[in-house]
Image 1 (cartoon, rainbow, N blue to C red):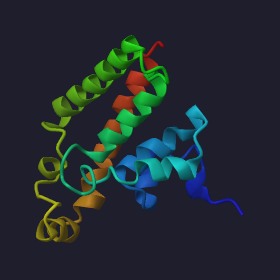
Image 2 (image 1 turned 90 degrees about the vertical axis):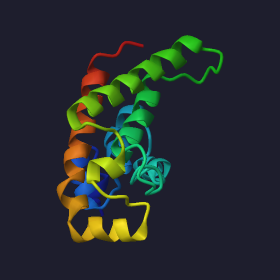
Image 3 (image 1 turned 90 degrees about the horizontal axis):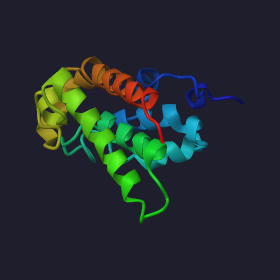
Amino acid sequence: MHDEREDPNRSPVERFGDGCSCSQAIVASHADRYGLDQRLALRIASGLGGGLGRAGGTCGALTGAALVLGLELGTEDIADKAAKERTYRAVRELQDRFAARHGTTQCRQLLGCDISDPAGYQLAREQGLFLSACPTFVASAAALLDELLDGTTR
């Protein structure tokens, strides 16, 4: 039986709505492009949501997008300094564009509460921030990622 959550054509926002974390939504939506199994993509990104393990740091949609940029621009050759620099530049550009749109890249600032604290996490849930604010950030990171991917050359 086909599980529509594994449909490679589902958008990151749809995947987030299905229950993926912000980072999982981004990585899973790009997995097929790189021959990455959907389930493995979900596992790879599973610790990044909520600003790295719900610590409120860098938005998980951005860290997921950074993983995708690594798949696109990175190399298996650890001596390839040019690929490393190219990847770093792209990730930095992603962060800069996101911060220009939203004022920050930090989850706790984007949400206006510290979800690393149990009381802050509960407040975010009660205020519906994960349903109202996070899809905007997932969509934004996905759009910025797609812009960067469209402009990349290996």
